[in-house]
Amino acid sequence: MFDFISDYNDPTLLGAFWMTVKLTVFSGIASLVGGTLLAAMRVSPVPLLRGFGTAYVNLVRNIPLTVIIVFTSLGLADIFGMTMGAPDDFALQGFRLAVLGLSAYTAAFVCEALRSGINTVPVGQAEAARAIGLSFSQVLGLIVLPQAFRAVIGPLANVLIALTKNTTVAAAIGVAEAALLMKEMIENEAQTLLIGAVFAFGFVVLTLPTGLFLGWLSKRLAVKR
Image 1 (cartoon, rainbow, N blue to C red):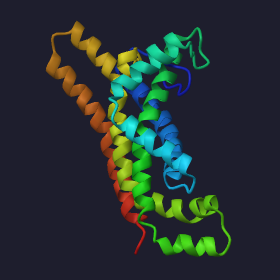
Image 2: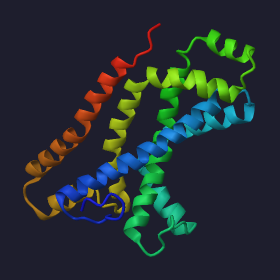
Image 3: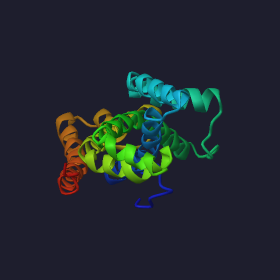
Image 4: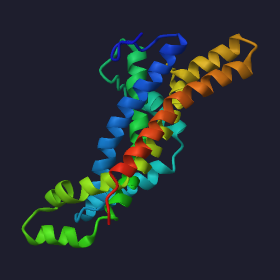
């Protein structure tokens, strides 16, 4: 059950929450990378990149996550035949498609959080870096983004917590995470309130320590102005 890579169909309570953790971790990493690239595009001096970043963020943020998740399954997998490297393993394929959909959606929010952090960096620092001959990518990677990340640990923590709760949408394409197991248990048992309370407590256990730790980290690493 605790094989982090290969177990995608564990019907137990711990297995379902472990699937939620895996969805959160993989989607969180991918959305952080994607959101950073989008943020770089949105502040890029190249109009085409700025336009793409702006269009992506405004479009994706206004599409319900359920629509995106279902599209990854019905659209990418069923219509375009995208198997995500697992043509015969439907559980693995569903997991990877869910990560793709969650990452694509969450990256837009990571981008906006990072862009707000970039706006807190004094313009004079970037101008001084350009004056000594640094390129845009060097200014962004060496000076602006390190300060931006420190400034937005709190907002990124909120995005991560929202992502953890959003993993429940993966049940729409049959991924065996907590929400799908809860639905099945409610259908088979007559103890709706008890089952709901157990799963609610499980999500609190997942999200509360994360929020507290990242909140503490945000205060500790806050940039002093």
